Length: 602
Image 1 (cartoon, rainbow, N blue to C red):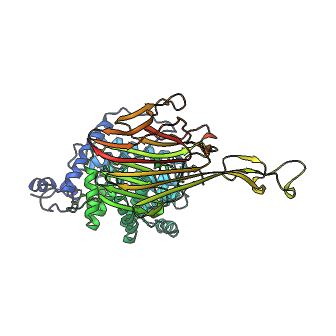
Image 2 (tube, rainbow, N blue to C red):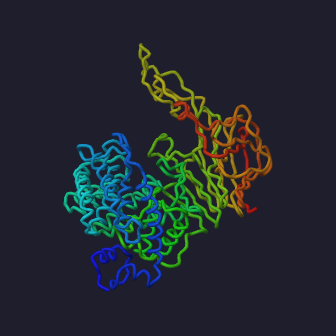
Image 3 (cartoon, rainbow, N blue to C red):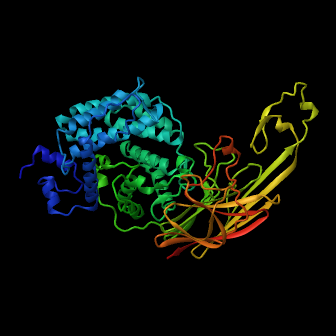
């Protein structure tokens, strides 16, 4: 059978390994598609459904402040148009939609060639859009279809204008450097110019920081994915294989940060995801590519775990099909075999964290807060020091604190690992202040606006030059020891006597409690929309989700004073409350208490 031009185009978009003789559909019919091709077809079916909805949508008139997204619509429409297996293959109905979506991005560029996308006139946020738009242009060019000429011209002009801006544009955060570099590498691959490479090398010249464990400085699963994606793109497009090394280090670290269901530990993050579950599915493209490239079975096992999830919104909720068309490597089959580590204890030195997993049991012990630097984006300030899960039953957070001079929740000052024990400690000191020495006085009584030692308040009293006295102390220590099926937490709170103290256990919603639990009274009553607030009076209690349960206790409820927020929140009229259903164990100092937390099957 003679090969037509259309057949040749189709073959260029089919996974590597399809025979060049005969058309692509015949080749697929003669042999069962490999795993990679089957997964591509799964993505394509989902993409076709998304495209069908786009086709059926009524045109939307966008105002100047409308959010355009990151180019996903352009990529989805083009993927359907270019894929022979799509029900929309080369459909003329898609052309005005693609062209209109691309033109919307071109029209949205500011005079300097940047988008208002979250941040205003933002080089990195514009760089995020380049990823999908540049991939789409690369795929369109390979089609050599005259019907795509308008789209190619529009996207090309958009990318070149953005490129002019990115060679001088700045950044805000560590990951932004690599987003900009990745965008420039993509633009360079389509419109080669040395100035793009020069700017990339300027940023790379700062060095690529990863801690001893392979985590980037923000320690964030969301932005870690952004960074490995950027290095992978640069390695591939600039032919710099050395840039794959930080990708490997981070993907390997994730193997020991993954929960049994694929969520990634977030308690140590320095970004907004430090209290927000993040699934390893965001990393699907990177794990798949590196599994195939390196023939790494462990990475392949992660890709298979992700593929078991329902739906195809695998990368931050988006279908990654355009990248399977851009790079045929992704449509190769994954290496056989491989397992995700499921029985280990691993210390993350850079995060002051210990991770432990025993099958469907997993726990984290954490003491790596950036406190007392503050509470802000870019700082690790999550006060959770322990979490635990047994299957679907999840204890998201254990925190503690007392009503001690509004100094708030316990934040460990690092961790000490002693054999099977992990020790977390913090000492709080609250001084009073003596009269100002004569040499620092002035007749007007006008003194430096300054903070007290613990920074819980400021005043025009020149505190640094005053002698401290009457120092009150609260020593807080918890020793965590692994036992059969769980952990034992030994609390030792000493110092000033009679301080009301609370231990907070926050469980993810979806389960049922059992045991001696009572609802909060007036002092600690439930706040609307925040889940239940319970006090454990005595004995052991359980939290059950299906056949999985967490047993905890024994309880103690000497008071209902919950005072974890502290001055940093109270000064802004805010409160610090863990999400979910919260159980409190309470007492007064000196407090010595052992709480056992273990997983059980029902």
